[in-house]
Length: 99
Image (cartoon, rainbow, N blue to C red; front, side, top):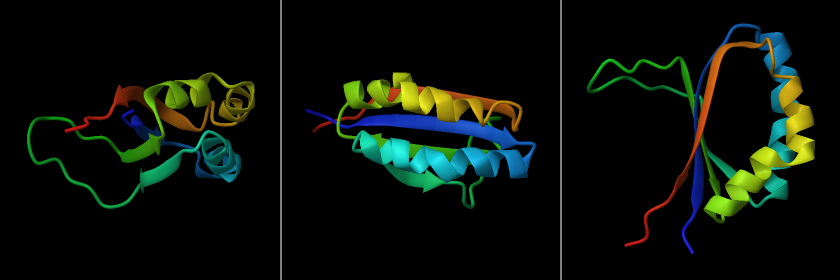
């Protein structure tokens, strides 16, 4: 079984409100066996015109676990705390590659 990844780009417009979301989101991620691989940090565009403000990458034991995390009632409640704290928040789930 291959890992499942959540790739997230966002622009935080209300840092204080976003802190409320980030105080609770990591525990929900852990509950599904997930972990943060990237959580902000330095980045630069090397090709193309993509220029996200902030990037996060989360890894889960499987694609299905990543989706289950997102659709879980606990995360959906936590997600409400993020609403209004970002100008945009894009999230995609992708199946990892197993050579």
